[in-house]
Each structure stands twice: as structure tokens, then as C-alpha cells.
Length: 342
Picture 1 (cartoon, rainbow, N blue to C red):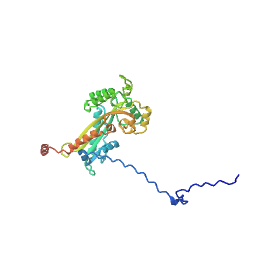
Picture 2: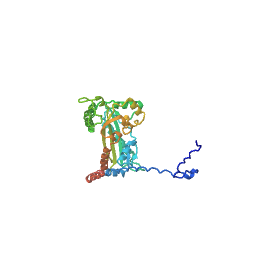
Picture 3: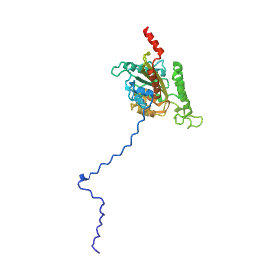
Picture 4: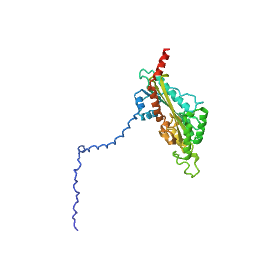
């Protein structure tokens, strides 16, 4: 037997040079930062004469609501001052329909800020005042504004969840309108259409109501939780002419029917209340935020529930700018001069 050892097998020499002992001389180059994708460009602002006129004037939002300011920015009114109205919201609700109450409140806010800023020597006369007021109306016709405390907040949201059926709600509001003479709001017609759609289960987002149980059957427990949201918008602009009262006032009221999901639990309501998102909102919830999880469907405009219906606001803006810039007809001008002389 031989004592000879087998030859040692050596690894092949590396093709790259070995690392240096002096690490300072071989610091790797910093990695290149990944390129960020380009941000999407913002859309161009709406190119409308009324909006151009509003942008060139001292435009004031008579509300501290950041949601209303943001909505106005969406139509290109971003250079606006925010001067909340100091007018007390103490109009008696008794004897007024929701339509009348919210309209009077918004008009009072707009005129209060206009009068307050009329003689502002530093900033000059206001060119346009935009004010709004939003209320939520429960099944029994009660006007729900901001919750007073946590207990009231919970009770308010439960009442909205457990409210009556939409057809009963329509009938109830019909009685309110007949009793208060507020048929101009048109809310009965609108909610009647919503009631028909909900009963048929067509295009309402009520998860196929009436279909899953077979022909002629419907889960009536799901047809609850309806309430109404009213937002009144009031715009004031000073008149170029000397016509009394010296300003133009245009107003409108938008309404939306909102349905809470009847399967929302008490625990979810309590959890939402404790987020404190809804403490400063009419009805105690914000549909544009976490509060959207409470809502199953709406009939009407979403921005109206948020607090400012943009379509109505733009229509009012076109009207009030046209009135503000209009000159007196020549015959009316002569009559006013004659009245002043005599």
C-alpha cells in the first residue's frame, strides 16, 4: 500500500481582481435613484365668462368649510377669500319648511358678510359673496344640524339608519309641503321618483332589492334609512348701476335623497362617532370621508351632500354677474334723475 497522498485540487483563478484590504479605495458607487413617473397634469380651468369675471373680482366665501372652498377650486375659483359669516344661525324653525329655513339662513349669511365688507378701506368693496347652508332632514321632518355631543351624535346616526321607508317619507314630506306652502322646492316630485325607482329596484344600488326573493316578493326591511339633504346657495354682487338696493342677490336650493345601509351595526356607528369626523357636519356624517361607509345609495348630486352643489352655484354665478354688470336702461336712468331733482 502506497503512502502517497493524492494531489491537491486548486480552484480556478477568479476572472475579477480580488477585493482590496483597504475598503476605502473600493467604495461602490451610489445606486442611481429610480426615476419617478411624471405627475399627471392638472386639467385646464373652465373657460367661461362668468368664471373669468369672478376671478378678476374680490370674491369671498362666507363659510369656514374647507370642503366648500375645495369644491369651488374644482371649477377654477381658487383665489377666494374666506370670511365666515358672523350672523347667528337662530332663525326659528317652527312654521318653516326645510326649504324655507335653509334658504333664509344662506341668504342672511351672504348679506351679513356683504354689509360687513362694504366699507373695507383696506381691501375694497367685495365683488362677489358666496354663501351656503346645509341641513339634513330626518323621516319625521326634523331638521338635523351638527351633533351637540357624543350621545346625541350616536342617536342621530341611528335615527338616520332606522328611518322610514322612502314611500312613507315621500308621503310625510307631501304633508309638510301642503301645510307650509313650500311647494316651490319640488322635493316631493324628486323623492317620488326615487321612491318609484327604489320600489322597482332599478338603478338604485340597493343590491337587487326585490329580485333575490323571487317574483312578487321583496325584503321590505332594506327599504329604510332614507333622509334628505338640503343645501341653499346665495350669491351677492354689487350693482354697477345705482339701482336700489345696490346689490343683486340670487339663490337656489338643491336637495338629495340619501339612504343609509340598514345593515350598519351599532358598533360601526360608535366607531365612526369616535373618529370625530362628523362633529362639524349637518347630520353628523361626511359622505366624502369615512362616513361614506354608512351610505348605501343616493338620489341627486353628491356635491350637494358634501355642502355645495356646483352646478347650481355656476348657474347662480352666471345670473348674478349678468345682473351686477348690467347698466340701467336709458328711460329708467332718466326717471331716476327726475326723481332726484324733485
